[in-house]
Amino acid sequence: MCGIFGYVGNKPARKILIDGLRTLEYRGYDSAGIFTPRGGVIQAVGPIAALEECLLVDDSSVAGIAHTRWATHGAPTLANAHPHHDATESIWIVHNGIIENYQELKEELAADGVTFYSDTDTEVLAKLIGRQRADTLQAAVVVALARVRGTYGLVAMHVDRPDELIVARMGSPIVLGVGSGEHFVSSDPAALLPHTKTVLYLEDGEVAVVSASACNISTLDGVHRQKATETIVGEAAQLQKQGFAHFMLKEIHEAPEVIENAIRGRLMAEEGTVKLGGIEPYLEVFSKLDRLTIVGCGSAYYAGLVGKYLLEEYAGLPVEVELASEYRYKRNYHLGNTAVLAVSQSGETADTLAAVRKAKAAGILTLGIVNVVGSSVARETDAGIYTHAGPEVAVASTKAFLSQITVFALLAILLGRQRQLSAENGKELIQALTELPQSIQKTLALSSYIAEIAKKYAHTRNMMFIGRTFHAPLAYEGALKLKEVSYLHAEGYAGGELKHGSIAMLDAEFPIVTLVPQDAVYEKMLANISEVQARSAPVIAIGTEGDTLLPKTVDDVILVPKVHEMLQPIISAIPLQLLAYHVGVAKGLNVDRPRNLAKSVTVE
Ligand code: F6R
Image (cartoon, rainbow, N blue to C red; front, side, top):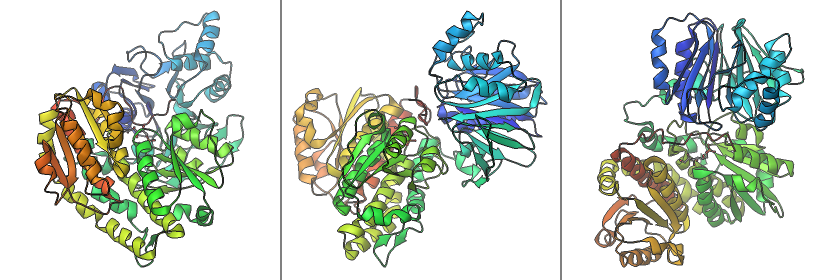
Protein backbone atom coordinates (compact mmCIF):
# COMPACT_ATOMS: atom_id res chain seq x y z
CA MET A 1 0.00 0.00 0.00
CA CYS A 2 1.38 3.28 -1.12
CA GLY A 3 4.03 3.17 -3.77
CA ILE A 4 7.27 5.07 -3.55
CA PHE A 5 9.76 5.77 -6.28
CA GLY A 6 13.03 7.65 -6.24
CA TYR A 7 15.65 8.57 -8.81
CA VAL A 8 19.13 10.03 -8.76
CA GLY A 9 21.22 10.06 -11.90
CA ASN A 10 21.89 11.88 -15.11
CA LYS A 11 18.48 12.23 -16.77
CA PRO A 12 15.54 14.57 -16.19
CA ALA A 13 13.92 13.06 -13.11
CA ARG A 14 10.27 14.04 -13.45
CA LYS A 15 9.34 11.76 -16.31
CA ILE A 16 11.15 8.83 -14.71
CA LEU A 17 9.35 9.47 -11.43
CA ILE A 18 5.92 9.70 -13.02
CA ASP A 19 6.50 6.59 -15.13
CA GLY A 20 7.59 4.79 -11.96
CA LEU A 21 4.41 5.90 -10.18
CA ARG A 22 2.27 4.68 -13.06
CA THR A 23 3.56 1.16 -12.49
CA LEU A 24 3.12 1.48 -8.74
CA GLU A 25 -0.37 2.95 -8.98
CA TYR A 26 -1.88 -0.42 -8.09
CA ARG A 27 -0.52 0.16 -4.57
CA GLY A 28 -2.88 3.07 -3.99
CA TYR A 29 -4.47 5.87 -5.97
CA ASP A 30 -5.94 8.27 -3.43
CA SER A 31 -3.36 10.96 -4.22
CA ALA A 32 0.05 11.30 -5.82
CA GLY A 33 2.96 13.66 -5.55
CA ILE A 34 6.56 14.26 -6.53
CA PHE A 35 9.38 16.45 -5.28
CA THR A 36 12.41 17.48 -7.28
CA PRO A 37 15.02 19.92 -5.97
CA ARG A 38 14.57 22.39 -8.81
CA GLY A 39 10.91 21.87 -9.63
CA GLY A 40 9.67 21.71 -6.05
CA VAL A 41 6.63 19.78 -5.00
CA ILE A 42 3.65 18.82 -7.16
CA GLN A 43 0.70 16.93 -5.72
CA ALA A 44 -2.76 15.94 -6.85
CA VAL A 45 -5.72 14.14 -5.33
CA GLY A 46 -6.74 11.06 -7.29
CA PRO A 47 -4.75 9.00 -9.74
CA ILE A 48 -1.32 9.66 -11.22
CA ALA A 49 -2.81 11.06 -14.42
CA ALA A 50 -3.60 14.23 -12.49
CA LEU A 51 0.13 14.85 -12.10
CA GLU A 52 1.01 14.48 -15.71
CA GLU A 53 0.64 18.11 -16.69
CA CYS A 54 3.67 18.88 -14.56
CA LEU A 55 5.69 17.25 -17.31
CA LEU A 56 4.98 20.31 -19.45
CA VAL A 57 6.89 22.52 -17.02
CA ASP A 58 10.67 22.73 -17.42
CA ASP A 59 12.58 21.04 -14.64
CA SER A 60 16.22 20.18 -15.05
CA SER A 61 16.43 18.18 -11.78
CA VAL A 62 18.19 14.86 -12.14
CA ALA A 63 16.93 13.50 -8.83
CA GLY A 64 13.63 13.36 -7.00
CA ILE A 65 11.14 11.36 -4.98
CA ALA A 66 7.57 10.33 -5.76
CA HIS A 67 4.61 8.72 -4.01
CA THR A 68 1.20 7.28 -4.79
CA ARG A 69 -1.01 7.04 -1.72
CA TRP A 70 -3.48 4.61 -0.22
CA ALA A 71 -4.86 6.67 2.64
CA THR A 72 -4.33 5.33 6.16
CA HIS A 73 -4.00 8.44 8.36
CA GLY A 74 -6.12 11.26 7.05
CA ALA A 75 -8.51 11.57 4.14
CA PRO A 76 -7.31 11.63 0.53
CA THR A 77 -6.74 15.40 0.38
CA LEU A 78 -4.03 17.59 -1.05
CA ALA A 79 -2.78 18.45 2.44
CA ASN A 80 -2.31 14.76 3.21
CA ALA A 81 -0.62 13.93 -0.11
CA HIS A 82 3.07 13.05 -0.01
CA PRO A 83 5.87 14.15 -0.27
CA HIS A 84 5.84 15.72 3.18
CA HIS A 85 8.36 18.19 4.52
CA ASP A 86 9.94 19.41 7.74
CA ALA A 87 9.32 22.84 9.28
CA THR A 88 11.86 24.61 7.04
CA GLU A 89 10.82 22.77 3.86
CA SER A 90 14.44 21.63 3.47
CA ILE A 91 13.77 17.95 4.03
CA TRP A 92 11.23 16.08 1.90
CA ILE A 93 10.14 12.51 2.42
CA VAL A 94 7.92 9.84 0.89
CA HIS A 95 6.82 6.99 3.11
CA ASN A 96 5.00 3.67 2.80
CA GLY A 97 3.89 2.08 6.07
CA ILE A 98 2.47 3.21 9.38
CA ILE A 99 4.18 5.08 12.20
CA GLU A 100 2.28 3.54 15.10
CA ASN A 101 3.41 6.00 17.77
CA TYR A 102 2.89 9.06 15.58
CA GLN A 103 0.29 10.56 17.92
CA GLU A 104 2.69 10.45 20.85
CA LEU A 105 5.51 11.93 18.72
CA LYS A 106 3.17 14.57 17.35
CA GLU A 107 2.17 15.70 20.85
CA GLU A 108 5.80 15.87 21.88
CA LEU A 109 6.73 17.95 18.82
CA ALA A 110 3.66 20.16 19.24
CA ALA A 111 4.68 20.84 22.85
CA ASP A 112 7.95 22.10 21.38
CA GLY A 113 6.10 24.52 19.14
CA VAL A 114 6.03 22.46 15.95
CA THR A 115 2.90 22.99 13.87
CA PHE A 116 1.33 20.54 11.46
CA TYR A 117 -0.43 21.03 8.14
CA SER A 118 -1.74 17.47 7.60
CA ASP A 119 -3.28 14.53 9.45
CA THR A 120 -0.58 12.13 8.37
CA ASP A 121 1.88 10.09 10.36
CA THR A 122 4.41 10.84 7.60
CA GLU A 123 4.42 14.57 8.28
CA VAL A 124 5.23 13.77 11.91
CA LEU A 125 8.20 11.73 10.73
CA ALA A 126 9.38 14.54 8.41
CA LYS A 127 9.15 17.05 11.27
CA LEU A 128 10.93 14.66 13.62
CA ILE A 129 13.79 14.23 11.15
CA GLY A 130 13.97 17.99 10.72
CA ARG A 131 14.33 18.51 14.49
CA GLN A 132 17.43 16.36 14.81
CA ARG A 133 20.73 18.12 15.32
CA ALA A 134 22.84 16.05 12.99
CA ASP A 135 25.56 16.80 10.45
CA THR A 136 23.98 14.80 7.66
CA LEU A 137 20.47 13.88 6.56
CA GLN A 138 21.40 10.23 6.96
CA ALA A 139 22.31 10.81 10.60
CA ALA A 140 19.09 12.77 11.20
CA VAL A 141 17.01 9.99 9.62
CA VAL A 142 18.72 7.31 11.69
CA VAL A 143 18.24 9.20 14.97
CA ALA A 144 14.59 9.94 14.15
CA LEU A 145 13.87 6.35 13.16
CA ALA A 146 15.20 5.18 16.51
CA ARG A 147 12.17 6.95 18.04
CA VAL A 148 9.68 5.35 15.69
CA ARG A 149 7.51 2.26 16.22
CA GLY A 150 5.85 0.88 13.12
CA THR A 151 6.68 0.19 9.53
CA TYR A 152 8.33 2.22 6.84
CA GLY A 153 9.76 2.21 3.40
CA LEU A 154 11.21 5.71 3.36
CA VAL A 155 13.04 7.97 0.92
CA ALA A 156 14.25 11.36 2.09
CA MET A 157 16.03 14.21 0.35
CA HIS A 158 17.54 17.50 1.53
CA VAL A 159 17.38 20.57 -0.73
CA ASP A 160 21.05 21.26 0.00
CA ARG A 161 22.03 17.78 -1.20
CA PRO A 162 20.04 17.44 -4.43
CA ASP A 163 22.31 14.61 -5.55
CA GLU A 164 21.55 12.21 -2.71
CA LEU A 165 18.65 10.09 -1.48
CA ILE A 166 18.44 8.53 1.98
CA VAL A 167 16.48 5.30 1.90
CA ALA A 168 15.38 3.19 4.89
CA ARG A 169 13.28 0.10 5.37
CA MET A 170 11.37 -1.54 8.19
CA GLY A 171 8.53 -3.85 7.23
CA SER A 172 7.64 -2.18 3.92
CA PRO A 173 9.30 -3.28 0.70
CA ILE A 174 12.14 -1.29 -0.87
CA VAL A 175 14.35 -2.28 -3.75
CA LEU A 176 17.20 -0.26 -5.22
CA GLY A 177 17.76 -0.35 -8.99
CA VAL A 178 21.34 -0.04 -10.23
CA GLY A 179 21.73 1.69 -13.60
CA SER A 180 24.65 3.21 -15.41
CA GLY A 181 25.47 6.43 -13.55
CA GLU A 182 22.03 6.35 -11.96
CA HIS A 183 20.11 4.65 -9.17
CA PHE A 184 16.42 4.07 -8.61
CA VAL A 185 14.36 3.30 -5.52
CA SER A 186 11.05 1.50 -5.74
CA SER A 187 8.45 -0.31 -3.64
CA ASP A 188 8.26 -3.02 -6.30
CA PRO A 189 10.96 -4.37 -8.62
CA ALA A 190 8.46 -4.40 -11.53
CA ALA A 191 8.62 -0.59 -11.70
CA LEU A 192 12.37 -0.86 -12.32
CA LEU A 193 12.01 -3.06 -15.41
CA PRO A 194 11.99 -0.18 -17.95
CA HIS A 195 15.36 0.97 -16.54
CA THR A 196 17.36 -1.92 -15.14
CA LYS A 197 17.21 -5.53 -14.05
CA THR A 198 20.10 -5.18 -11.59
CA VAL A 199 18.83 -4.63 -8.09
CA LEU A 200 19.81 -4.53 -4.44
CA TYR A 201 17.17 -5.50 -1.89
CA LEU A 202 17.15 -3.48 1.27
CA GLU A 203 16.41 -5.51 4.41
CA ASP A 204 14.52 -4.38 7.49
CA GLY A 205 16.71 -2.18 9.67
CA GLU A 206 18.93 -1.02 6.82
CA VAL A 207 19.53 2.47 5.53
CA ALA A 208 21.14 3.44 2.22
CA VAL A 209 22.79 6.63 1.03
CA VAL A 210 22.14 6.63 -2.69
CA SER A 211 23.78 8.93 -5.24
CA ALA A 212 24.15 8.66 -9.03
CA SER A 213 27.38 6.73 -8.67
CA ALA A 214 27.16 4.92 -5.35
CA CYS A 215 24.89 3.14 -3.00
CA ASN A 216 26.19 2.76 0.56
CA ILE A 217 24.15 0.50 2.77
CA SER A 218 24.46 0.14 6.52
CA THR A 219 22.34 -1.01 9.41
CA LEU A 220 20.52 1.60 11.48
CA ASP A 221 23.20 1.13 14.11
CA GLY A 222 25.95 1.94 11.66
CA VAL A 223 27.36 -1.42 10.57
CA HIS A 224 28.36 -1.32 6.89
CA ARG A 225 26.61 -3.89 4.67
CA GLN A 226 28.27 -5.21 1.54
CA LYS A 227 25.54 -6.60 -0.74
CA ALA A 228 25.67 -8.50 -3.98
CA THR A 229 23.34 -7.28 -6.71
CA GLU A 230 20.59 -9.58 -7.93
CA THR A 231 18.91 -9.83 -11.32
CA ILE A 232 15.15 -9.51 -11.63
CA VAL A 233 13.14 -11.26 -14.33
CA GLY A 234 10.36 -9.87 -16.49
CA GLU A 235 9.89 -7.46 -19.35
CA ALA A 236 8.66 -3.89 -19.29
CA ALA A 237 6.09 -4.83 -21.96
CA GLN A 238 4.30 -6.96 -19.34
CA LEU A 239 3.35 -3.71 -17.65
CA GLN A 240 1.35 -2.51 -20.67
CA LYS A 241 -2.26 -3.38 -21.56
CA GLN A 242 -1.15 -4.70 -24.95
CA GLY A 243 -4.40 -3.91 -26.73
CA PHE A 244 -6.77 -5.08 -23.98
CA ALA A 245 -9.28 -2.60 -22.58
CA HIS A 246 -8.11 -3.27 -19.03
CA PHE A 247 -5.26 -4.97 -17.23
CA MET A 248 -7.79 -7.27 -15.56
CA LEU A 249 -8.98 -8.58 -18.93
CA LYS A 250 -5.43 -8.92 -20.20
CA GLU A 251 -4.41 -10.83 -17.10
CA ILE A 252 -7.40 -13.18 -17.33
CA HIS A 253 -6.41 -13.85 -20.94
CA GLU A 254 -2.85 -14.62 -19.90
CA ALA A 255 -4.11 -17.75 -18.13
CA PRO A 256 -2.84 -20.33 -20.65
CA GLU A 257 0.66 -18.83 -20.55
CA VAL A 258 0.48 -18.53 -16.77
CA ILE A 259 -0.22 -22.26 -16.42
CA GLU A 260 2.56 -23.06 -18.88
CA ASN A 261 4.97 -20.94 -16.85
CA ALA A 262 3.88 -22.57 -13.59
CA ILE A 263 4.48 -26.09 -14.89
CA ARG A 264 7.47 -25.43 -17.19
CA GLY A 265 10.42 -27.65 -16.36
CA ARG A 266 8.58 -29.10 -13.37
CA LEU A 267 6.76 -32.11 -14.85
CA MET A 268 8.44 -35.51 -14.89
CA ALA A 269 6.08 -37.31 -17.23
CA GLU A 270 7.83 -40.69 -17.16
CA GLU A 271 8.01 -40.92 -13.41
CA GLY A 272 4.54 -39.50 -12.97
CA THR A 273 5.77 -36.86 -10.54
CA VAL A 274 7.02 -33.30 -10.42
CA LYS A 275 10.23 -31.53 -9.55
CA LEU A 276 10.05 -28.37 -7.49
CA GLY A 277 13.61 -27.09 -7.17
CA GLY A 278 12.88 -24.53 -4.44
CA ILE A 279 11.69 -27.11 -1.92
CA GLU A 280 13.85 -30.03 -3.00
CA PRO A 281 16.18 -29.83 0.03
CA TYR A 282 13.13 -30.55 2.22
CA LEU A 283 11.76 -33.64 0.43
CA GLU A 284 12.77 -35.89 3.26
CA VAL A 285 11.07 -33.57 5.77
CA PHE A 286 7.90 -33.50 3.63
CA SER A 287 7.67 -37.25 3.56
CA LYS A 288 7.36 -37.16 7.36
CA LEU A 289 4.92 -34.25 7.65
CA ASP A 290 1.91 -35.00 9.83
CA ARG A 291 0.06 -31.88 8.79
CA LEU A 292 0.40 -28.57 7.02
CA THR A 293 -0.99 -25.14 7.89
CA ILE A 294 -1.65 -22.83 4.95
CA VAL A 295 -1.88 -19.08 5.60
CA GLY A 296 -2.89 -16.26 3.27
CA CYS A 297 -5.30 -13.38 2.78
CA GLY A 298 -8.14 -12.71 0.32
CA SER A 299 -7.84 -14.63 -2.91
CA ALA A 300 -4.58 -16.21 -1.77
CA TYR A 301 -6.46 -17.64 1.23
CA TYR A 302 -9.11 -19.07 -1.09
CA ALA A 303 -6.38 -20.59 -3.26
CA GLY A 304 -5.12 -22.14 -0.02
CA LEU A 305 -8.57 -23.62 0.60
CA VAL A 306 -8.49 -25.23 -2.86
CA GLY A 307 -4.98 -26.41 -1.96
CA LYS A 308 -6.36 -28.11 1.15
CA TYR A 309 -8.83 -30.13 -0.93
CA LEU A 310 -6.07 -31.10 -3.38
CA LEU A 311 -3.50 -32.05 -0.76
CA GLU A 312 -5.95 -34.01 1.35
CA GLU A 313 -7.43 -35.83 -1.64
CA TYR A 314 -4.28 -36.63 -3.60
CA ALA A 315 -1.52 -36.58 -1.00
CA GLY A 316 -3.50 -37.76 2.03
CA LEU A 317 -1.96 -34.94 4.02
CA PRO A 318 -4.14 -33.26 6.67
CA VAL A 319 -4.21 -29.53 6.01
CA GLU A 320 -5.67 -26.57 7.83
CA VAL A 321 -6.03 -23.16 6.23
CA GLU A 322 -5.91 -20.03 8.32
CA LEU A 323 -6.44 -16.39 7.51
CA ALA A 324 -3.00 -14.91 8.06
CA SER A 325 -4.58 -11.99 9.89
CA GLU A 326 -6.04 -14.43 12.45
CA TYR A 327 -3.14 -16.84 12.64
CA ARG A 328 -0.77 -14.08 13.64
CA TYR A 329 -2.81 -13.01 16.68
CA LYS A 330 -4.24 -16.28 18.00
CA ARG A 331 -2.88 -19.32 19.75
CA ASN A 332 -1.90 -21.94 17.21
CA TYR A 333 -1.34 -25.63 17.88
CA HIS A 334 1.16 -27.34 15.65
CA LEU A 335 1.09 -31.00 16.47
CA GLY A 336 3.65 -33.49 15.20
CA ASN A 337 5.81 -32.75 12.19
CA THR A 338 4.35 -29.68 10.67
CA ALA A 339 5.06 -26.74 8.40
CA VAL A 340 3.44 -23.41 7.62
CA LEU A 341 2.91 -22.57 3.96
CA ALA A 342 2.25 -18.91 3.08
CA VAL A 343 0.46 -18.10 -0.16
CA SER A 344 0.92 -14.61 -1.56
CA GLN A 345 1.01 -12.99 -4.98
CA SER A 346 2.91 -9.92 -3.85
CA GLY A 347 4.91 -11.59 -1.12
CA GLU A 348 4.50 -8.33 0.81
CA THR A 349 1.10 -8.69 2.49
CA ALA A 350 1.75 -7.53 6.05
CA ASP A 351 -0.44 -10.15 7.77
CA THR A 352 0.97 -13.02 5.70
CA LEU A 353 4.51 -11.92 6.44
CA ALA A 354 3.69 -11.58 10.14
CA ALA A 355 2.25 -15.13 10.12
CA VAL A 356 5.47 -16.42 8.55
CA ARG A 357 7.53 -14.63 11.17
CA LYS A 358 5.38 -16.02 13.96
CA ALA A 359 5.76 -19.57 12.68
CA LYS A 360 9.50 -19.10 12.26
CA ALA A 361 9.83 -17.75 15.77
CA ALA A 362 8.08 -20.93 16.98
CA GLY A 363 10.71 -22.99 15.17
CA ILE A 364 8.32 -24.24 12.50
CA LEU A 365 9.45 -24.86 8.93
CA THR A 366 8.06 -22.07 6.72
CA LEU A 367 7.32 -22.40 3.02
CA GLY A 368 5.99 -19.98 0.44
CA ILE A 369 3.96 -20.03 -2.75
CA VAL A 370 4.81 -16.58 -4.04
CA ASN A 371 4.67 -14.71 -7.32
CA VAL A 372 6.99 -11.73 -6.85
CA VAL A 373 10.58 -12.93 -6.93
CA GLY A 374 12.70 -11.51 -4.14
CA SER A 375 9.67 -10.31 -2.15
CA SER A 376 9.66 -10.41 1.63
CA VAL A 377 7.70 -13.68 1.98
CA ALA A 378 9.94 -15.30 -0.64
CA ARG A 379 13.03 -14.17 1.18
CA GLU A 380 11.93 -14.93 4.71
CA THR A 381 10.48 -18.42 4.25
CA ASP A 382 12.82 -21.40 4.52
CA ALA A 383 11.90 -22.63 1.05
CA GLY A 384 9.28 -21.99 -1.56
CA ILE A 385 7.78 -22.36 -4.97
CA TYR A 386 7.47 -19.40 -7.30
CA THR A 387 4.27 -19.22 -9.32
CA HIS A 388 5.94 -17.33 -12.22
CA ALA A 389 2.66 -15.64 -13.17
CA GLY A 390 4.45 -12.42 -14.17
CA PRO A 391 3.49 -8.97 -12.90
CA GLU A 392 -0.18 -8.70 -11.94
CA VAL A 393 -1.18 -5.07 -12.35
CA ALA A 394 -4.97 -5.06 -11.94
CA VAL A 395 -5.89 -4.78 -8.29
CA ALA A 396 -8.18 -7.82 -8.39
CA SER A 397 -6.15 -11.00 -8.49
CA THR A 398 -6.94 -13.26 -11.45
CA LYS A 399 -3.98 -14.95 -13.08
CA ALA A 400 -2.11 -15.18 -9.78
CA PHE A 401 -5.02 -17.11 -8.26
CA LEU A 402 -4.90 -19.63 -11.12
CA SER A 403 -1.15 -19.98 -10.78
CA GLN A 404 -1.44 -20.59 -7.04
CA ILE A 405 -3.93 -23.44 -7.56
CA THR A 406 -1.67 -24.85 -10.28
CA VAL A 407 1.24 -24.88 -7.86
CA PHE A 408 -0.94 -26.59 -5.26
CA ALA A 409 -1.74 -29.24 -7.89
CA LEU A 410 2.00 -29.74 -8.43
CA LEU A 411 2.60 -29.97 -4.70
CA ALA A 412 -0.26 -32.45 -4.31
CA ILE A 413 1.32 -34.66 -6.97
CA LEU A 414 4.78 -34.41 -5.41
CA LEU A 415 3.59 -35.16 -1.85
CA GLY A 416 1.04 -37.63 -3.19
CA ARG A 417 3.75 -39.66 -4.90
CA GLN A 418 5.65 -39.77 -1.60
CA ARG A 419 2.57 -41.09 0.20
CA GLN A 420 -0.30 -42.67 -1.64
CA LEU A 421 -0.47 -41.71 -5.31
CA SER A 422 0.48 -44.46 -7.77
CA ALA A 423 2.87 -43.70 -10.64
CA GLU A 424 0.00 -44.41 -13.00
CA ASN A 425 -2.25 -41.83 -11.34
CA GLY A 426 0.66 -39.42 -11.22
CA LYS A 427 1.16 -39.80 -14.97
CA GLU A 428 -2.52 -39.22 -15.57
CA LEU A 429 -2.37 -35.97 -13.60
CA ILE A 430 0.78 -34.82 -15.40
CA GLN A 431 -0.94 -35.46 -18.72
CA ALA A 432 -3.98 -33.49 -17.55
CA LEU A 433 -1.74 -30.58 -16.53
CA THR A 434 -0.06 -30.61 -19.94
CA GLU A 435 -3.43 -30.36 -21.68
CA LEU A 436 -4.79 -27.69 -19.36
CA PRO A 437 -3.66 -24.55 -21.29
CA GLN A 438 -5.65 -25.73 -24.32
CA SER A 439 -8.83 -26.10 -22.28
CA ILE A 440 -8.23 -22.69 -20.76
CA GLN A 441 -8.00 -21.20 -24.22
CA LYS A 442 -11.40 -22.68 -25.04
CA THR A 443 -12.82 -21.27 -21.82
CA LEU A 444 -11.53 -17.78 -22.60
CA ALA A 445 -13.40 -17.89 -25.91
CA LEU A 446 -16.59 -17.64 -23.82
CA SER A 447 -15.76 -14.06 -22.82
CA SER A 448 -18.28 -12.26 -25.06
CA TYR A 449 -21.00 -14.79 -24.19
CA ILE A 450 -20.31 -14.16 -20.49
CA ALA A 451 -20.41 -10.40 -21.18
CA GLU A 452 -24.02 -10.79 -22.33
CA ILE A 453 -24.96 -12.67 -19.16
CA ALA A 454 -23.16 -10.01 -17.13
CA LYS A 455 -25.20 -7.24 -18.75
CA LYS A 456 -28.39 -9.07 -17.85
CA TYR A 457 -27.47 -9.20 -14.15
CA ALA A 458 -25.32 -6.05 -13.80
CA HIS A 459 -28.11 -4.05 -12.17
CA THR A 460 -29.11 -6.57 -9.57
CA ARG A 461 -28.21 -5.57 -6.01
CA ASN A 462 -27.16 -8.96 -4.66
CA MET A 463 -25.68 -12.16 -5.94
CA MET A 464 -24.87 -15.46 -4.27
CA PHE A 465 -22.30 -18.08 -5.32
CA ILE A 466 -22.36 -21.74 -4.31
CA GLY A 467 -20.17 -24.75 -4.96
CA ARG A 468 -19.14 -27.93 -3.19
CA THR A 469 -15.86 -29.66 -2.34
CA PHE A 470 -13.13 -28.39 -4.72
CA HIS A 471 -15.57 -25.73 -5.87
CA ALA A 472 -16.66 -24.37 -2.48
CA PRO A 473 -13.61 -22.06 -2.29
CA LEU A 474 -14.33 -21.06 -5.89
CA ALA A 475 -17.75 -19.83 -4.74
CA TYR A 476 -16.05 -17.67 -2.11
CA GLU A 477 -13.59 -16.38 -4.68
CA GLY A 478 -16.32 -15.69 -7.26
CA ALA A 479 -18.18 -13.56 -4.70
CA LEU A 480 -15.01 -11.71 -3.68
CA LYS A 481 -14.13 -10.94 -7.29
CA LEU A 482 -17.61 -9.59 -8.00
CA LYS A 483 -17.62 -7.44 -4.85
CA GLU A 484 -14.23 -5.99 -5.64
CA VAL A 485 -14.79 -4.87 -9.19
CA SER A 486 -18.56 -4.25 -9.31
CA TYR A 487 -19.38 -3.22 -5.70
CA LEU A 488 -22.34 -5.61 -5.83
CA HIS A 489 -23.22 -7.32 -2.58
CA ALA A 490 -22.13 -10.93 -3.12
CA GLU A 491 -21.74 -13.94 -0.85
CA GLY A 492 -20.13 -17.29 -1.42
CA TYR A 493 -21.17 -20.50 0.33
CA ALA A 494 -20.52 -24.18 0.24
CA GLY A 495 -23.71 -25.58 -1.34
CA GLY A 496 -24.60 -27.65 1.71
CA GLU A 497 -24.57 -24.58 3.94
CA LEU A 498 -27.30 -22.80 2.05
CA LYS A 499 -30.19 -24.25 3.95
CA HIS A 500 -28.57 -23.45 7.28
CA GLY A 501 -29.50 -19.80 7.00
CA SER A 502 -28.56 -17.91 3.90
CA ILE A 503 -31.33 -19.36 1.70
CA ALA A 504 -33.59 -17.00 3.67
CA MET A 505 -32.24 -14.11 1.59
CA LEU A 506 -33.18 -15.57 -1.78
CA ASP A 507 -36.06 -14.35 -3.91
CA ALA A 508 -36.69 -13.48 -7.55
CA GLU A 509 -34.35 -10.46 -7.22
CA PHE A 510 -31.42 -12.46 -5.85
CA PRO A 511 -29.56 -14.37 -8.59
CA ILE A 512 -27.34 -17.26 -7.65
CA VAL A 513 -24.26 -18.49 -9.48
CA THR A 514 -23.88 -22.24 -9.07
CA LEU A 515 -20.70 -24.19 -9.78
CA VAL A 516 -21.89 -27.50 -11.16
CA PRO A 517 -19.16 -29.52 -12.87
CA GLN A 518 -20.03 -33.18 -13.51
CA ASP A 519 -18.13 -34.48 -10.51
CA ALA A 520 -18.87 -36.54 -7.42
CA VAL A 521 -21.18 -33.86 -5.98
CA TYR A 522 -23.01 -33.02 -9.21
CA GLU A 523 -26.33 -34.37 -8.01
CA LYS A 524 -26.01 -32.58 -4.69
CA MET A 525 -25.57 -29.35 -6.60
CA LEU A 526 -28.62 -30.12 -8.74
CA ALA A 527 -30.57 -30.55 -5.51
CA ASN A 528 -29.31 -27.13 -4.35
CA ILE A 529 -30.45 -25.65 -7.65
CA SER A 530 -33.96 -27.06 -7.15
CA GLU A 531 -34.05 -25.61 -3.65
CA VAL A 532 -33.15 -22.11 -4.79
CA GLN A 533 -35.48 -22.30 -7.77
CA ALA A 534 -38.29 -23.12 -5.38
CA ARG A 535 -37.57 -19.65 -3.91
CA SER A 536 -37.75 -18.10 -7.41
CA ALA A 537 -34.05 -17.15 -7.46
CA PRO A 538 -32.65 -16.85 -11.00
CA VAL A 539 -29.87 -19.42 -11.51
CA ILE A 540 -26.68 -19.00 -13.52
CA ALA A 541 -24.81 -22.29 -13.73
CA ILE A 542 -21.20 -22.95 -14.59
CA GLY A 543 -21.17 -26.55 -15.77
CA THR A 544 -19.09 -28.75 -17.99
CA GLU A 545 -19.36 -29.44 -21.71
CA GLY A 546 -21.53 -32.41 -22.59
CA ASP A 547 -24.00 -31.71 -19.80
CA THR A 548 -27.40 -31.72 -21.50
CA LEU A 549 -29.47 -31.49 -18.34
CA LEU A 550 -28.11 -28.25 -16.91
CA PRO A 551 -29.04 -25.99 -19.87
CA LYS A 552 -32.63 -27.20 -19.52
CA THR A 553 -32.67 -26.61 -15.79
CA VAL A 554 -31.30 -23.09 -15.19
CA ASP A 555 -31.78 -19.55 -16.50
CA ASP A 556 -28.28 -19.09 -17.88
CA VAL A 557 -25.60 -21.67 -18.36
CA ILE A 558 -21.88 -21.42 -19.07
CA LEU A 559 -20.38 -24.74 -20.14
CA VAL A 560 -16.62 -25.02 -19.80
CA PRO A 561 -14.33 -27.88 -20.89
CA LYS A 562 -14.32 -30.85 -18.53
CA VAL A 563 -10.80 -31.58 -17.29
CA HIS A 564 -9.37 -33.79 -14.56
CA GLU A 565 -11.28 -33.21 -11.30
CA MET A 566 -8.07 -31.90 -9.68
CA LEU A 567 -7.76 -29.14 -12.25
CA GLN A 568 -11.42 -28.29 -12.80
CA PRO A 569 -11.31 -25.41 -10.25
CA ILE A 570 -8.70 -23.69 -12.45
CA ILE A 571 -11.08 -23.82 -15.42
CA SER A 572 -14.09 -22.80 -13.29
CA ALA A 573 -12.30 -19.74 -11.97
CA ILE A 574 -12.15 -18.18 -15.42
CA PRO A 575 -15.89 -17.67 -16.03
CA LEU A 576 -16.13 -16.29 -12.47
CA GLN A 577 -13.38 -13.79 -13.21
CA LEU A 578 -14.91 -12.88 -16.56
CA LEU A 579 -18.36 -12.47 -15.00
CA ALA A 580 -17.00 -10.07 -12.37
CA TYR A 581 -15.03 -8.19 -15.01
CA HIS A 582 -17.96 -7.79 -17.38
CA VAL A 583 -20.39 -6.77 -14.61
CA GLY A 584 -17.87 -4.09 -13.52
CA VAL A 585 -17.49 -2.87 -17.09
CA ALA A 586 -21.27 -2.92 -17.67
CA LYS A 587 -21.61 -0.69 -14.61
CA GLY A 588 -19.03 1.69 -16.06
CA LEU A 589 -16.55 1.13 -13.22
CA ASN A 590 -12.77 1.28 -13.22
CA VAL A 591 -12.24 -2.46 -12.85
CA ASP A 592 -8.47 -2.15 -12.69
CA ARG A 593 -8.56 0.29 -9.81
CA PRO A 594 -11.61 -0.43 -7.63
CA ARG A 595 -12.40 2.17 -5.01
CA ASN A 596 -10.94 1.86 -1.50
CA LEU A 597 -8.54 -0.92 -2.50
CA ALA A 598 -4.85 -1.28 -3.11
CA LYS A 599 -3.19 -4.35 -4.46
CA SER A 600 -0.45 -4.91 -2.00
CA VAL A 601 -1.77 -4.69 1.54
CA THR A 602 1.37 -3.79 3.45
CA VAL A 603 -0.50 -2.26 6.38
CA GLU A 604 -2.11 -4.27 9.14
C1 F6R B 1 -8.43 -10.17 -4.42
C2 F6R B 1 -7.10 -9.73 -4.03
C3 F6R B 1 -6.74 -9.75 -2.60
C4 F6R B 1 -5.39 -10.45 -2.44
C5 F6R B 1 -4.92 -10.37 -0.98
C6 F6R B 1 -3.61 -11.08 -0.78
O1 F6R B 1 -8.63 -10.05 -5.78
O2 F6R B 1 -6.31 -9.34 -4.85
O3 F6R B 1 -7.71 -10.39 -1.83
O4 F6R B 1 -5.51 -11.77 -2.85
O5 F6R B 1 -4.77 -9.02 -0.63
O6 F6R B 1 -2.59 -10.52 -1.53
P1 F6R B 1 -1.24 -11.30 -1.78
O7 F6R B 1 -1.57 -12.50 -2.59
O8 F6R B 1 -0.38 -10.32 -2.53
O9 F6R B 1 -0.70 -11.66 -0.44
